[in-house]
Length: 296
Image (cartoon, rainbow, N blue to C red):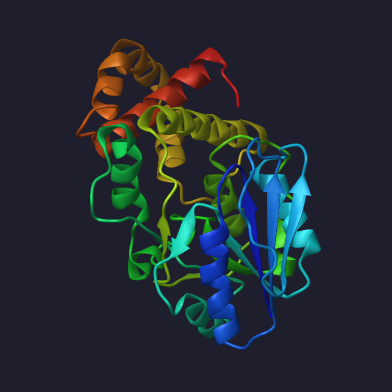
């Protein structure tokens, strides 16, 4: 019935596997758990002695996109539940909720993201603030625009649909593919539904690392915009960039980024980072990259 697929890189997934396995057994459904250890540089702890659980080990890191493709190719059930290594189900009914969602006649179901209420220390604050503001969104709101908040760290999808859609993503180890994935789902009219079945995001990066990832995500988005020219999407950043480009205003934001980059970074790496400033940083960096020919 369900293949739970978990790619991991330098992350201990033992507690995640134990929690998910326990719920799968409790619900008495056919299942398997497959972990793909993607070229980690340190030894990971992934218990494969649990029933219907196996580990694939790659000596070289192949990246998130290809790792998921490899996991899907190994899976034997019709439904694929993708989980990132650094998450933990919020509810003890996590698997039960997904089983019920299968009956709704959709091609895929997104469960959502959650963050703990207590603020992390300053060096991790940016990722937490962004996640609380832009990712921790109730399903009722997500379903109003089902392709807008696409978080592939926790979702269930038909195997055939995943293989068809994910095969369209070129081999790339960059960051920010959820935006493009959402555009592909929308462009191919894949029926997606959102439910309140969140996982806690545990692996919050340091602010410096996350800011670099947001730059990479902007480049990834820009790359697909330039090479594939998709217009049927729900991405706010790309919509704004398209408008700026149409009115020949990208140079203004590029100049803004050059002039105020350090000031914005001071806020974003500080104790009280502003998500609004992060959004301004992202769009101005995207315009800067476009003007200067920087590619993913």
